[in-house]
Image (tube, rainbow, N blue to C red; front, side, top):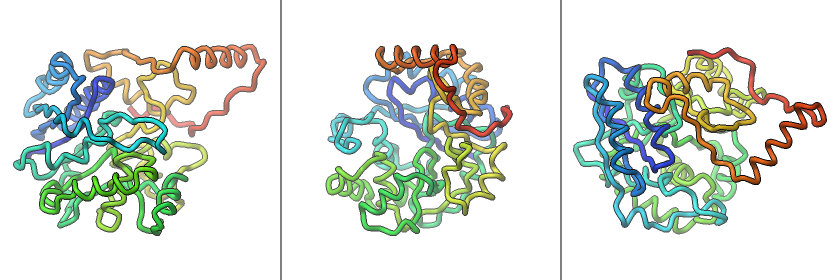
Length: 319
């Protein structure tokens, strides 16, 4: 059995992508896996070698790199509310059917900020039929309501997260869905808030397979004030402490400073410690914000400012 996994990365996400790959390899020992990594032009040969070193440690695991074409890279992608330009890599997955060879007919797409804890075979064997995509619904954000209201569509159709996908590339190619993606981005650029996710939700609004939540346990599922529709309560609780895939959709576990650390941060660190990036953290805050955070934290330490209430449920690490 062979599983094809796809991911997209720029230089900022090489380390998280490598940790994701490590978790996949560790927890799928008896399956041949090919990682199809779409790389931006700022990803170096050394970065690719680091990712290849991950798969070289495991039997039956390999990686193939696909540099994104200049035409795709220079596409005028929609900004968030026309306020700033998002990372280009967020949109590259829309071109998977064109970038990957026709011999790759189906892929599991994984964002770099996920950790895979169990076998991916049940996900891979999900029956897609003639549907183009399978994903986990996330009907919990105000953004999803805004998405439907701005497009005059019913919220009953459901909105999914694009960080974990089962993609039927054969259908994408047959239907040339890239043309539908481009058309939506051209017509509704000012309405797009969540990048490729909004694009795919529109194009596949009425033709998608819902995956079990365990394949994409997002940060909002662990908040004290639940950020999901009550209809998912039983399924969330069932997957709560033993998800197949954890998706760190909020503060990232590799950030040097995080006011609300994810309760399952230790799971990411477990797999990071198995790689060359052991204990590596990134600082993305501008200097001014760092000074503001430092001052506020000192005032809280001296009890001159109220303590911040934890937004997450109090749970024990699971790995």
